[in-house]
Amino acid sequence: MTRPLRDVSARPDLLLGALAAALDGSGPAVLPREDVRPDRPESDEVPADVALVVHTSGSTGEPRGVMLGAAALRASASATAARLSGPGQWLLALPATHVAGVQVLVRSVLAGTTPVVLEPGPFRPAAFVAGAARMAPGTRYTSLVPTQLVRLLEDPAATAALTGFDAVLLGGAATPGALLAAARAAGVRVVTTYGMSETCGGCVYDGVPLDGVCLALEDGRVTIAGPVLATGYLGRPDLDAETFVVRDGVRRLRTADLGRIDRGVLTVLGRADDVIVTGGVNVAPAAVEDVVAALPGVAEVCVVGLPDDEWGQAVVAAVVPAGTPPTLEAVRAAVSAALGSPSAPRRLVVLDQLPHRGPGKHDRRTLALALTDRRTTT
Image (tube, rainbow, N blue to C red; front, side, top):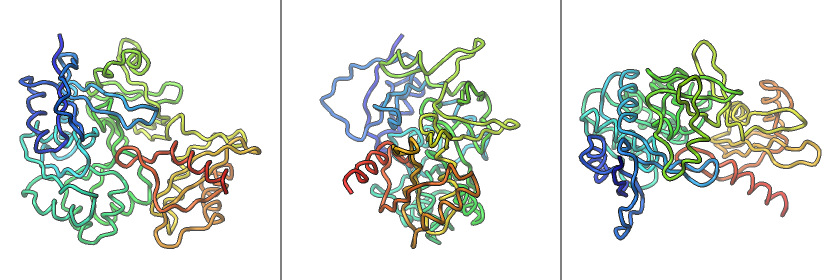
């Protein structure tokens, strides 16, 4: 059994009704898009249980269409409400073409609440404050990425608005420890999330899996089981077989992330394909970034490995400054003290901005290519 898949504008006022119909089965499955072609025939078919298709951010190549079932979306929303303070009203501050943004709308539909949507345009603290002011009294939530939280904490009015939320879900990228500490010190109830499109978004909150979600490690990689798993990939059964595996009769998602589980709490160590091998030592970029992000003068940081004749790969830190950036010597000293000298960056590059792919995610591949070209031409 199949059902049609329809492209729908990612404008929340148009998308909400389509999502409601997709979830209750009265309408076709929905694929949110920024640009909807009215002349495009609705020829795509998906399994009958699928309600939503979202595109990944393409970290491993071309973006993939992830098929999410109505039951999986309901399980995710129910588990989220149970972990937080029950159903509530949401403020949408993320694009509805990505899973974190569209999940704000799905949770609103299933909770019977009306989300408040930020005005179109670049993310600005003033717009967030205005959006928060339009919310009704009661339980209130929002979902952000770390770069948004950085900007909001720099603005006193936005920080005050953040403290009025019962929970601020923070995901999409690794959260520097210093940023998390600063938010909580300001009274913001931040909940870090880990998940992906294939798990209906965040399925691990503050390191602890949501109800029904089961974590395990396989060769150091995080695997996830539970009712939130995607049905599969649109038109890519080959990827289904590669990514969704059966272990002891249980269907699991084999992620590309390395992790550690200690007393039921997951720590994500970064993507397996991001690991930098320098002088025969494996270096996790996320761990280096966490140290550098805590230094004065650093607004954002991304660490990559660049080809090096002596070391195989050289650890390079690219930072967006907040005022006067730290020196390479200061960066190397801090990282060496925290992680050991092999992890210390051998180059420090100061940039006006870092390349991104999807909300909040640094594009390491693009950055590494740009820095390699810069070194070649200078």
